[in-house]
Every structure is written in structure tokens, then in C-alpha cells.
Length: 149
Image (cartoon, helix red, strand yellow):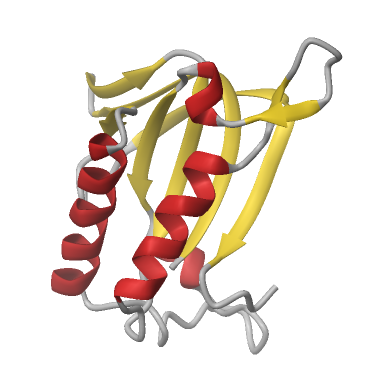
């Protein structure tokens, strides 16, 4: 699994004119699922993002997690995170999971985050969405469950 994690003051996702998910302070997570992903990748990603210390403490040091600040999470499925742009000009999505697997892992990821007591909003799987991200900091991190970078 691969994720782009952004600390935000606000985030929302719309399909057409309808807002389908919206959060205040927290994390926006763009999530991609690889065809080789297993349960261990899912568990790694859940643990990593909810415990990532990216929120400022009283000394303005990034020392608090999403759980510490009782923040929200907006999770948006984004298979293009698996695009390989090393050759040519068109990205290859060879490592991306097929839609059935990707949707299953996406749904399970969201469920596991909710089970941890986090308020979660989502986009809609395989929909064309407009995502508004009010990056706070800016703080943007890349996470890969295979630790390839």
C-alpha cells in the first residue's frame, strides 16, 4: 500500500456539486493499493498513519499523533499513486491492484481506522472526485508499506 499523508486544517471531497466527505483538523490520506498487498501491508498502514507524530505540541514540535489531537481523517482512494513514470511519458500502473481487491482493502482500511475511534470521511471508490486540501504547515509525507522509499 502506498499513501500520501497531508496534515490539514480542513479537507473535503466532492463528486460533481455534492460534497461526499469533509473533515476539519486532521489528515487527508490518498491511498493506493498494490496487487501484491497482503494483510500485513494493511495493518502496517493503519498503525503508521494513526500513530504518526505530525501535529505540534505546546513547544511547536511535531510530537503528537492524530489520536493525541483527536483529529479527523479523510481517506481518498487513488490508484495513480502506483503509477511508474520511470520509462516513457505515460505512467504504467502494472503494480496497481485490480479494482475488486483495491476496493476491498480500501474499505477494510477505513473500517480499521474507525474501529480505533477516529472520525473518518471518505470519497467514493472509482468516482471522478474533486479533492480540496487545506495543507497545514505544509506537512506532506509519503508512506509505502513495502518501505520501497
